[in-house]
Image 1 (cartoon, one colour):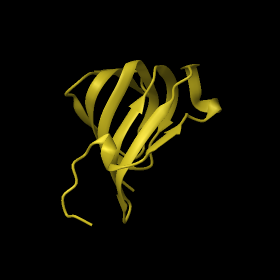
Image 2 (cartoon, helix red, strand yellow; image 1 turned 180 degrees about the vertical axis):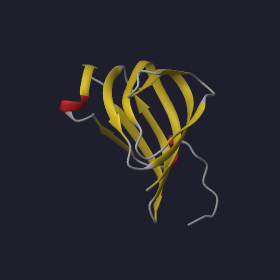
Image 3 (cartoon, rainbow, N blue to C red; image 1 turned 30 degrees about the horizontal axis):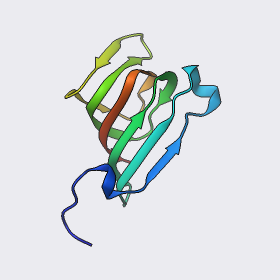
Image 4 (tube, rainbow, N blue to C red; image 1 turned 135 degrees about the vertical axis):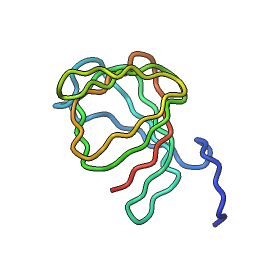
Length: 113
């Protein structure tokens, strides 16, 4: 295994899923994940979602950078965070709210459990 890996969809097999039905607020979002790295509670890869809105709740720490598309993350207090290409952010353990994909969104991510 090489010590260098380019973070692209070709670096991993695609996995497709959806949010749990009880979390979906609107639409039928489909998530595709290319999990390039997974070891010792660390995950890194690329994630994409089609439009829809669902409830989120984080137990883990996650860094994200939006590569394409438009999304809105709304926290439990109602504060909206509009996101587009180039935006980077962190979701900390304990964060809850909603994620709404307005335009199919692709991000890269690093998750630490």
